Length: 213
Image (cartoon, rainbow, N blue to C red; front, side, top):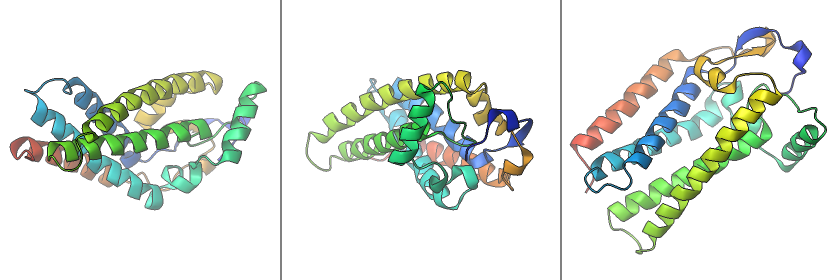
């Protein structure tokens, strides 16, 4: 959804709580998995982060079909046309404003989900010693690729915040953006956000106490 900068005025709820919680859970778990990746002593902790990531990704994939307006795949899926128009608008120094994710951000989101899924799947298979030995190589390569994409994503968020004169990081914390009230989502689904936090915490603690062999 695009709007002109001049038409934006008030703090309007755009991101529901489950979307924001899922985002920051992934940030936390990816950071934790990275920090524990080189230590055999912390292997159980590393695996717990990985399985929790899988749970959150599973939720996000489903939420992309049944969630609120701007969380749905159909709202921001980066078609070739959308990406092209957005890039051209940047080159013309008149970047399109998108209420939800912009097309380049959407590309980054899909890449991160794909790389996260690959990293987790190959990590679990390597842990269980299922499949060929080179799965561990794919696990490491996808993890390294993920770090690169995350770096680009963060840089893109900062640049986009400057171009559109809005704090996107803060928006993903508060859920609000400077938009007309007519663009607000109808329900924040706060209860589901709390459920997601408890489910992720429960999954993490369970895996620490009952590690998968």
